[in-house]
Length: 421
Ligand code: PMP
Image: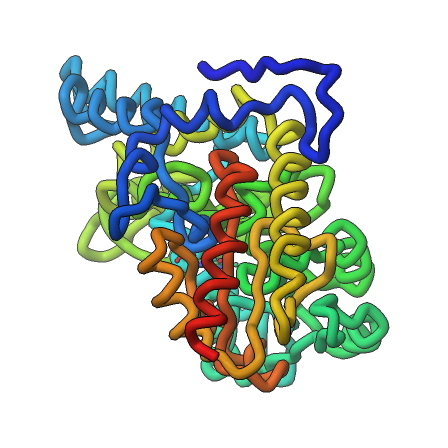
């Protein structure tokens, strides 16, 4: 496992004791040339690259212990079951869940949010005239499932507005809570603008108003320490692939008391206790919500990714990434006509546009210079509409990015802008 070591006396802009240069070799994909230049990967909000520890965990699963889990009497089934359940324990302790039974493996954030929206809808807990509260900053994954729920239940979708600096309007939020809000479904960090919402305070206010709270931690997972009990929330979702694990695996954490009171959603193997043609009784948590064969390898690799991150420590990673983002904003600030979105204390993503230049053209030229960024609406069309734009250029950061990536981004952007103007 990687243990960062550095010179504590080094008091440059970047936090001492964090040496990404030692980490980069752990990510084999980063060692390649794109269009004749070394890859500068700044699309981490879309997906992160995978370290050797994760690649080896996936490979070991299929090479050594592949088997379907639970119910198996043979040796490999026992090994695979043990590894899968150990992965659940790793996730549970990473989130500070009260019990591993509260950790449901899903295919990702989108799947987890759909699960919650559907079981709330089936339970009848949200009915005609009730309100679901989201924010302007949400990803489509945290909008559309709630819209679908509202349509089915006759409920109303309400939206917390945001200020021009990309922060949510807290006064408007408190006013909205005076309505019939049954659930607040909120992103922790905006994937588009990097806004970090004050989720603890907002949760406290929503709970005081009698609402459930679900956090979309798709972006937060790689950048923030998560303590579901300290937050006081009811549900939290994240995707493995944004925290250095494979695609196709994610987590819904839900408070046992609430999940126990809600009905199952998908029916099938594993989620049952007993089946007859007349009636089925359902399994306990977490299996009640894990119908069918899960992504066993994905769960094991996710645990390896979490161990990898914790081996470095989010307390090391977070200030380092914040310093990189600040440096990127400073380095780009000289480009005439540049506009940044989101507050200065953004996390993960830095979004911008340059006057007179289309974000797509800029992104295409950056790619030709070996710099991978994302352009467009970032699955946040309502947020883009709020700012009167069709999209942005978004550079997003991970623990393996460096000051030289920032310099490459700034130089390539300046050059591309001069070519496009
Ligand atoms: N919410 C946020 C804030 C995201 O950034 C994303 C992914 N871009 C999602 C939800 C959806 O995640 P996934 O596609 O992994 O389900």
